[in-house]
Image 1 (cartoon, helix red, strand yellow):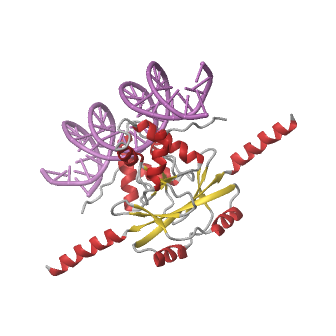
Image 2 (tube, rainbow over the protein chains, first blue to last red; image 1 turned 120 degrees about the horizontal axis):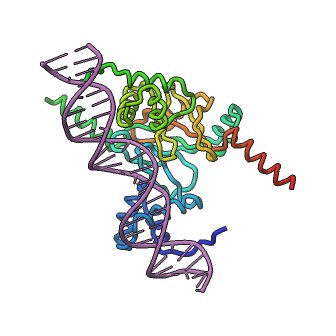
Image 3 (cartoon, each protein chain N blue to C red; image 1 turned 180 degrees about the horizontal axis):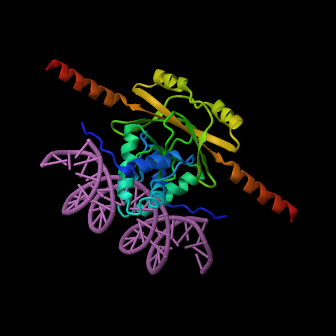
Length: 139
Length: 139
DNA sequence: GTCGCTGCAAAATATTTGCAACCCG
DNA sequence: CGGGTTGCAAATATTTTGCAGCGAC
């Protein structure tokens, strides 16, 4: 069993994530942390994000865009992904605990939890699409 | 608007996927199709999987292991991912249509659908873990 | 013949890892 | 000091793309 040691890099990564409600990627974390610690390396960011995630202090969000996103909110919750702009948002909907039970009843393995991703168009993008339609109509 | 042309490579990829209930990755598809068409290239496999997915003839499953998986079953359904072995299985549970409606009520964007991933230990791995525990107990 | 599709290779992306130096406890 | 952590660079891994030639219609 390994004992963790303090590292200001790791602390600042955790603090940075806590300030963000969007769900930054490793690279976004890197770019931002560099303003505070210009010498931090991308490898360190990846190592710490991965470590923090395995400790359960943050969580990894795989939303299907080929890049991992990270979330400081470790409470179980659902996510929304915009198909237009790719933004990732928390979905203000309480997780259905029943789902795990329902799944357990019908499945011959052990269910430990679930995650749900909603897909659609975020508010900003919905407005943009509407504007485009309006313009077209006005012509 | 582009007109599709027949390609035996694309057909064989579709056929191969249809024979599999697990959810192969692009590379697995590549390795298998090569037995039929030894000259097929990985690029062609990626291009066709991506094309078929955008046509809705197959679907992409992002399960968080850093690799895309593909599924010939285009009916909406949920998936299970084993944390031990990484296998991806269909979850025998009807999708909750209510979820989209509930989400729409609380969310200021447009919801078009959702997907749910269950995490846990598959039957095979549960058995393995049990055997290990049994052995330890016997000592 | 036109244009979509392919194989090949190179490029682009994303993430991991080996290693010597460094720093926390 | 001992060993976890870091920066850097090189290595992996995954997916995309440019291009010339081939094949469907």
